[in-house]
Length: 328
Image 1 (cartoon, rainbow, N blue to C red):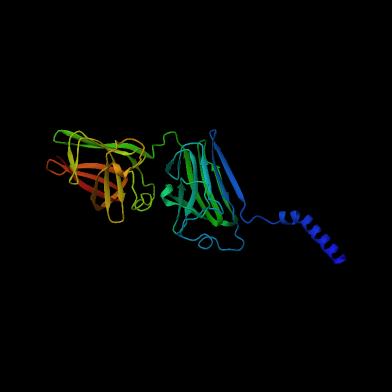
Image 2: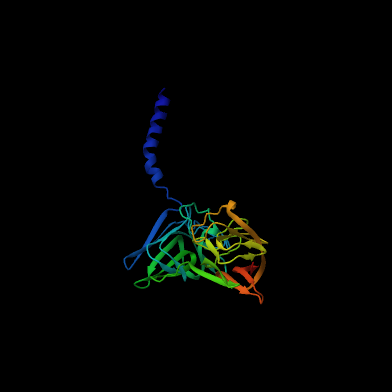
């Protein structure tokens, strides 16, 4: 009985001391935030701060040529209350996650539109922009990963990523003239005295891989950005040999690794994209070719072919697609 009492007393003493004991254990990768005010606006980064702890970092814990969470634990977040150019890329105010692609030859910085996820959950199709960063070797070893936001002017600054003997710098600048990331555009052709027009939005590559990534394979795509892409024909036409009566339509598409299928939907264009396969008027497999030079931004255009008709062309990145269009 006495032994039991002594044992109980020891356990009680240990439990009483436990909060103090455990509170002294360092958190391996504590969370931290940095802020910078520019002309009454704020940019901030929230990230996990791993330490070296005797490990090789660049090319080791941070592997080359693989997307890195740029910190630890939860994905690193970047918030800006102002429109800006970040590493030369236009970035509208909002919340993003920050990633990097380190390599021995240089680093790419990635802003991604997905937020709130764990740092191993990276979706490249959500990338807003990818761009090259300036990389330097610093003589003094930085033991704990550090992100610094420093003002370089009233409306400009630089973000620095520091760890081991590596410094990665990204300049940014407040801008009140950020162009729309996917500006609207149109193209038209006249066939037998009747106008055929396409209205669409023009997303930019911004360093991203397009086919199979930003535009996934084997899924219905809006064929542009923002509002649904519209086709308006004042007269009856044929597109890819399929009859298209005069009227207003929406264009969708299904890209794949080896083909590009254009979908003409009977729903009027210019609205929020809401694809309904029951409204399909026609599906047309377009001719696929390699672009002689990168097409950026995304583009839709008509070309005459010396007859009464011409071609409808769609291109982005390293590919373009075409099909014949003619009066009916």
